[in-house]
Image (cartoon, rainbow, N blue to C red):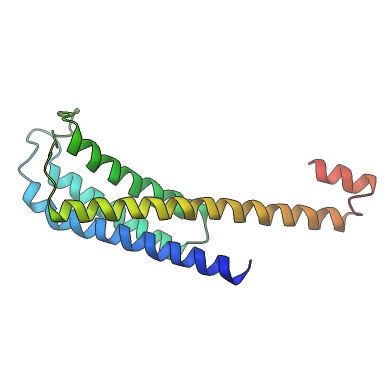
Amino acid sequence: MNLALRALRLLLALATAAGLAVDAYVHADFAPSFDPVGRGGLTEGELFRAEAAAAALAALLLLLFFRHRFAWLVAFLVAGAGVAAVLVYTHVDVGALGPIPDMYDPTWYTEKTVSAIAEGAAAVTAGIGLCLAVLLHRRSRAAEAAGDAADSGGAGSAGGADQAAY
């Protein structure tokens, strides 16, 4: 893989991890103030702590394993779910869903805005990183298949054609 793609993948991983870190910080910081919301089931504070933990874990996973598609997928899902949740619960009064409390909050304040922007940016960069990881994986598999076909007699021979079909 050339140097430009390596640099791009690393920059995407750092940008995604930074967005997830902001998400984790804001949710962990706000969790205690939302503990009273949601009596009888989960509290909003507990959900905020779960989001903070998921975002922190996804950021760490991506920083350690940014060459793997799975790490990108986890980062994309966590960031995408976070931005989707904040947008839905800002614009739609969903109400309580089973043990999940009513989290409708139509107001935008600085921390909520910062978190939504960070989650959105992380979702976009993770999506690009995931696409890049999938393309690079396919490219390496194709190169391996071409190398295997060449090792088994070349693409022009009957043995190479049979090998390429599998």
